Length: 272
Image 1: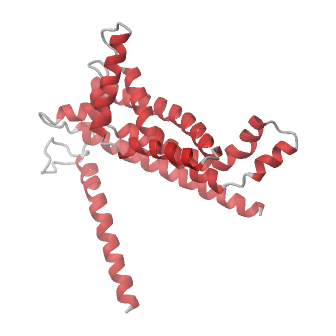
Image 2: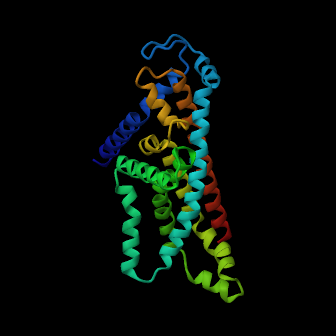
Image 3: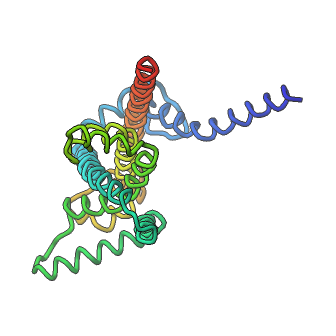
């Protein structure tokens, strides 16, 4: 009976992974298709990869997306870590619960509501300052920081709760200032949570379309917005090549992170 259950669970797991990764496999295969057909393979070719690197608009959209994702995720990680430390130190349970509820609202709020709200806020602020146009890089970065910040806070808080707070007190007893104690004791302990929050913020920023669509303005175009504009006519096959490159870049990054984590755990075991 247990063997049958084990076999059926393996089949179920294989089907789950098949449905998850079959579209990506098809995408990778057709990125090397010699023709622009999405149903017939005409041979192996790097034609669309060459087309991709010759497409100035797409390269600009990728650069814009990466700049916004990196800047917003770095700022959100710093602010989110500071906010998580502050929330963790709160003694009043009612205030702490209220702040956590407020933190959760941006995640529960539909993206279209967040996008329209930020658009109205930016336009209202621009009119108050007498500016004709405000939408652009700065509004995109502020908007992305706004919606990824809660994810960083919720990634760091569990690590703060897990760590032994007596360690930082002991460091201060031994002569460390509160700031030095934080950087020497607290920060290394919560670093896995900070890295998780940063990666999550980077991924969400990279992937966002709805909020970016409302606050981008006419001059700044991210990759998701460019892809959406293509769907009105026809998605060019060089987008298959770009998607393939993004997929393998993320795959390599995840493998490196897992390798570093495994190496860190081995070092901890040896130290013990």
